[in-house]
Image (tube, rainbow, N blue to C red):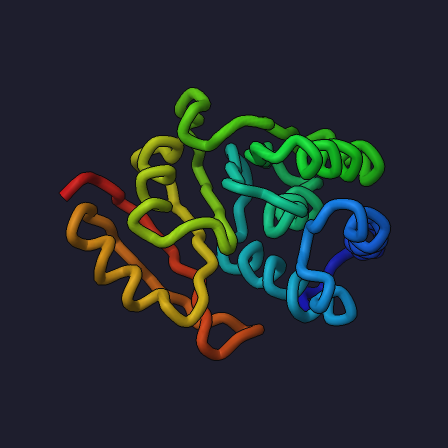
Length: 197
C-alpha cells in the first residue's frame, strides 16, 4: 500500500468502518468481499490515485456507489487543490456518501444524486469509474463530462481488451492500459483524447 500520513490512514480506516456499518442495510460492496476489503477495494482504489497523482483540478467519479474509487481519491487528495465530485443516482448510496464526507471531514468532496447523462457537462480534469458500464457506453459519459485536455482512469476487469476493440467502432481515443496490481487480469485504462469516430 502507498505510504500515507497518519491522518490519511485514520480516514481510510474510518471509511472502512462506515462501509462495514452501512453494508447490511445498503449493498455498497458485495458482502463476500468485506473480509478482504483492504485488498479487494482500498488497495485497488489507491493504485488508481497513485497512477493519476492529481495535484489540482476537478475529479469526477462516475457511478460512485459506495465511494470506490471516489471517496478514496477525496481522502488521498484532501491536502491538495483537488475537488472531488461523486455522481451517484441511487438515493440511499448518495446518503451514505454524504454521511461519509461529513464524518471523514472532507470539504473537498461533494455528491450529485442524479443520472450521469442528465447532469450538466462538468468539464472535469480527471474522470474515474469502477465496474460501471462497458467501455463504449463509458466513453459516452466521459466525452460529455471531461474537458478535452482531461484524463479518464477507468478500472476494468478481464474483458477490457474486447471492450476497447468494440469502443473503437464509435470512438477515437488514446489508451494506455496499466496492469492492475490487485488482479492480474484487470487493468486501469488511462484514456485521453476522446472524440466521436
